[in-house]
Image: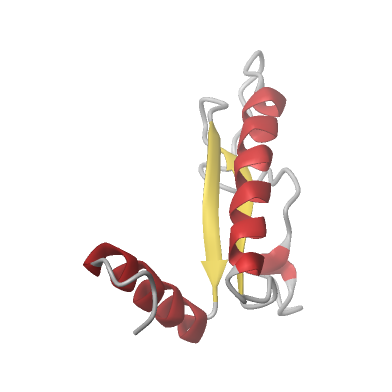
Length: 97
């Protein structure tokens, strides 16, 4: 993580993510595009339940094989709130704890 404090919100292709190596011939763009679509959907879901994307955000990336990966980056407090929401859904009360 660099020193600006906001770099964790980046959603671009990141050559430093994962192993940090780009292998010639691997289609990282296709994997990233798939991950971007999934991350966009998850970010819309976060917004729909009241999260700010500055607190919790899905970020598209790829692994060393070019496969799409979505990472959720967040501040600890927002992770706690997200965990409570998911636990409430798993318990069947629809998130109304």
